[in-house]
Amino acid sequence: MPLQMHENFINHAKENLLQDHRFLGLLAGGSMITSTMDEYSDLDLIVVYDAEYREEIMNQRLLIAEKLGNLLSGFTGEHVGEPRVVICLYGPPPLHVDLKFVTVQELEQRVENPIILWEKGEEIIALFQRTSPIYPYPSPQWIEDRFWVWVHYGATKLGRGELFELIDHITYMRNAVLGPLFLIKNGVLPTGVRRLEKYVSEGLEELKETIPNHGTESCYHALQMTIRLYQQLRQHLGNIKYKREAEHVSVAYLETVYTFLDK
Image 1 (cartoon, rainbow, N blue to C red):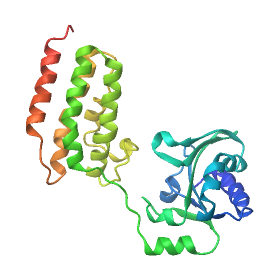
Image 2 (cartoon, helix red, strand yellow; image 1 turned 180 degrees about the horizontal axis):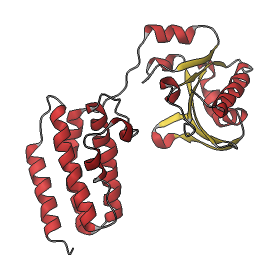
Image 3 (tube, rainbow, N blue to C red; image 1 turned 30 degrees about the horizontal axis):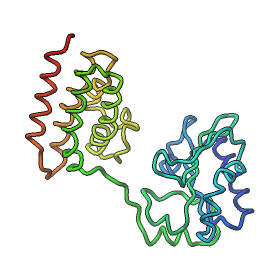
Image 4 (cartoon, rainbow, N blue to C red; image 1 turned 90 degrees about the vertical axis):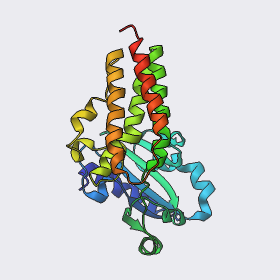
């Protein structure tokens, strides 16, 4: 359940949006849906507006965010490929709020059924009743086609001693591959590495070994463990075409690079 500061923000936002004829509803996603909110939770809010005012709303979305509370800082989400989102920090006390501005029609493509906090009319609930959310799962073949290229790239960074770059690269592989595959194996939505500690037990200790320190031995071991875990996890992915030659060449290259390093 939302805490008092979450409820206070939602109530103020509803009061503000009710006074603007351009808005049709306010929805909540994320942890509010699953009733897993705690003192560290942010708010994922969806502001639904009349499509007639699209250009106007998109131009004013930061100004609208300012009216919903004491906005300390806010910016739009182009860096994550979602310009409709305004990422906000309100306070004090500090509260992270993501505001996503959408039309009713855009709600047809969604990853979850958000909670309707307020709606003008019944257009939103009617849309939810006739359509279903679809959560995007990673393509096993997409991963296999890329994984061994990523291993080779990591080996080149190890050879050059570009360990900061390699650490970031291994982190990406954990976020894009290992985390989602572990969650899928445990019957959970593949949300990167979020809540791995909660949902994954078998393999968690090995997964920790994919987090390297800034050192040659540590980075090599972390990349090796990343390979080993992927090889185990892909056995549960069903019918995919393994890139056996790419696997052999990239793993052998990693070993060659490591052998000739001045350790």
